[in-house]
Amino acid sequence: MYTPALVGWLLVLYFLYKYILYPAFFSPLSKIPNAHWSSPISPLWILWKRYACAENAAIHAAHVKYGSIVRVGPNDISVNCVDEGIKTIGGFEKPDWYRNAFTNFGVINMFSMKESKPHSAQRRLVSNSYSKSTLQSSPELHHISETLLFGRYLPLLDSLAVSKSSVEVHELNFATTMDFINAYIFGLSNGSNFLQDVNTRKHLLHSYQCRRAYQFFPQEIPQIKNFFDQLRIKLVPTWVEAATSEFEAFCEKMCNAAATTLRTVSLTPENTPTVYRNLSTPLVPKSSPSAPPGPDPSLLVASELLDHIAAGHETSGVTLTYCMWSLSQRPSLQAALRHELLTLAPPIVFPSDTSLPSLPSPRTIDALPLLDAVLMETLRRYSAIPGPQPRETPSAPTSLAGSPPLPAGVRVSAQAYSLHRNADVFPSPEEWKPERWIEAAKEQREEMNRWFWAFGSGGRVCVGKHFAMQGTQSSPPGPSTYGSIKNISQDPEN
Image (tube, rainbow, N blue to C red; front, side):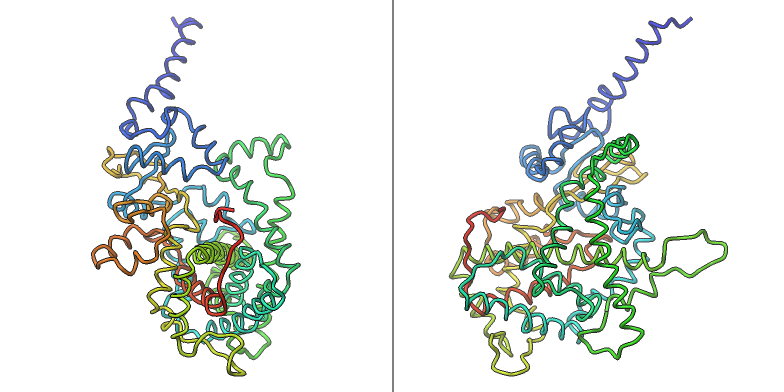
């Protein structure tokens, strides 16, 4: 007969085995080096690092100490290798981590989709708008680039030079990339004008950026957040939700304007809502009497396009800022880049020698070796998305980086921050050295490309990577040919 004391001891032994002995000594993950002594039995260490925005450096330090695979939590590992690393996890499904933080209007989009099949179907609808061949041959994007560069960006730099004023480059770069992505999606007349409308720029960029500190709660501890919500204790303040709604309204307004343009206006290339036109009909599922009611069709489109806006402006804006800061530290390299850019035909100069200035073809700009090296090295050293991109192990046991076969449902991540600091592939990895991409032998360049992970890899590789590259290629020529870049801060992290 079981006495209460015996039942109590059995429960103690059960919990001792399940939550301490098994994860620490018997789980397949127990053979993986621990990033912290508590990693096998508690997620608190890695949760604190994530909350404190210190995760990237902490995980990288663990990889440097223990090798290509480390355990950061009871069911959470990080890999830092290509073979049995990013090449393998690129085919894994996404966890709810993405859905909890990257859903817009309450509607799933391609980036936040958990399952691969619906993601692949939606990706086929989106990818053609952002393919390299489409972008390089697009008259719409070419006209947009000319208008933004010669009509907004360079005149702004000229006015600053005439008045001998400095400028907060990071905000300016966000304005540039926001106008660029919105013009391509919705058409120039329907998009934003952050370069010239300073008040709107500051307000909406603040609405977008002020929410970042609170992403931790829905991403990492959604159950705890929901529990406190039930108690009417808000871990995420209501003003964060208001800021989100305001930015969603900003996107929805452009969607509505693009829809009106398609119905009523004879389109010019620069005012064509290219991406909206290509997605607005295919993204809406065909109605069926037997199908359960789905989300508002217009919100399916808006959710997808808001994700393009967020990713398209933020990552490229960060890249441009680090690019300009790095060039400001090396005047001789900046001069060499200016010399290369001035070989373009027609040259990118301001004021222009003609009343209708034009840009060289995107293919010509793409072929410039030093410009390519500068951008590749900036993306390597200062990746716009440097942190972990989690996936879940599949039902079939899978080995990673020499580990034992791992059970299903293990959170596994890799991060560009560590992949790009492999000293065997990128000697002196903390140095910003564009020359490495030019001087590398063919085999070395191929190995560098294998470890380059600024845009992810596999079936979930960034769909907008070619747009990002073409946009950043078009932006550095502006200040680099117009004048020299100087900085007043010695710390790029600030």
